[in-house]
Image (cartoon, rainbow, N blue to C red):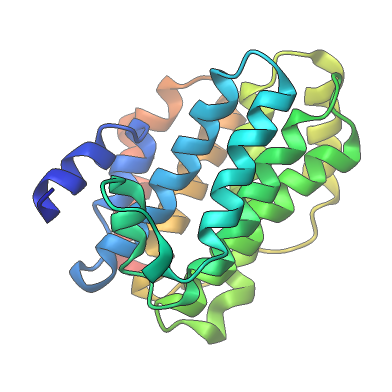
Length: 225
């Protein structure tokens, strides 16, 4: 499979918000960014289409074990793993994303701890991405962005009232700030976070695609704040 075919396959799996955020990735880090976003989408889809939590956990364990290995041990033919070959050894950090999604396989209603674990998993994966693309000094900022994105995303996607209320409490207690200018390689992460925050604040999917939201995305994507 060619690089173009791999990218086309993975792009199709992304949400409109993730595709928009990816468009601001510098060419040198586009493949790493695509791999991160596509893994999150793959894991979300895995949970969505697993009839039982145990089945989801088995599938998640495959991703955990595979990403924990050296890339030379990976099977051929999987587009997402092919994209992760662009991570020069830092792909082990993406295991945190698997751990985060596994927290959502806990019995319903999801507890405060399970929801926090999901947010922490996305945060750590964003921090690992920052390390991977040469932005180690901004790893803490990337983690804050990942945690904020996780919580606002969960707040609009969870169907149970008690779970949404628990996420709102986590948001209220989330002291980490995502303010400040972000390095260019991390701007796709910030775009994703600000659009998700707008969707959460307005309570609709359309709010993240409004002219105002797109102008906000352009500002973050071009200026980093």
